[in-house]
Image (cartoon, helix red, strand yellow):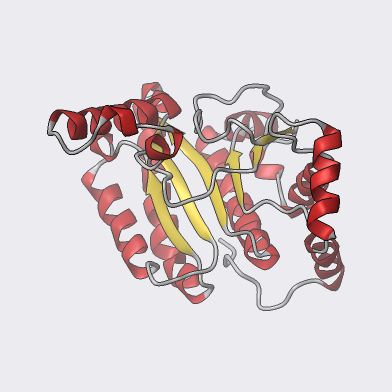
Amino acid sequence: MPQWFKSTIDPEDALIQEELKASCVFPRHIGIIMDGNGRWAKQQGKSRIEGHIAGVDSVRDIVEACTQLGIRALTLFTFSIENWRRPKTEISALMRLLIKVLKKETPQLRQNNVRLEVIGDMNLVSRAVRKTLEETMDETRENHGLTLTIALSYSGKWDITNACRNIAGQVAAGRLDPDHIDENLFASYLSTAPLPDPELLIRTSGEFRISNFMLWQIAYSEIFFTDTYWPDFRRNRLYDALREYQKRERRFGKTSEQLKTETFTNQA
């Protein structure tokens, strides 16, 4: 399996990155729904687990590219709560693969200033997986470059329900006045609270849905859909998504004219 970070960057790649970074419109946080490993494997005449293994190389390339671009946060939808309904053999193989990759690549993540975080219902995850995740998070905790978040055993509905439960507990205990509950307070109870909401959401494999991923957080995310299966999604496709993002006008309920006036005022 290739190392996560190459010692040098291709000159052409470096030029593209500089052009992208020169734009004043650049996402701090990118979320990716990594989809299509199984269909890629079927197309290649391989097993589903071979598709997941191939997908690891895409993870490596995208993490490296995001680090080079100075992206502050990258969240990868790795395994949903609904995915627990899949065949047990596939789930077991996936979890073994996750443990193997984390153990092998933790030194690279630590060395390249990447901090690992995880969101999701860890009560459903095996002790071995939790232990490996905790070890990697502990070893990379002091890193302050890219925050790489793995959404494992995660769903947006679970995240919102969990936040509601915790807020209700605070109200019941008399530690929180219901009149003080607003959007900002609610967001502080979500599993992604330390992160900015993703400005860009990418979905691979040609599907046009968000599959219960960060439902609250992506309220104003720009969404980039691509037919590319995840094992074939490499940095060139990430650059395409970033170029498309930079073309879009993010109005947040305002008109184009208001945005132009505000930009002119800020520049004056």
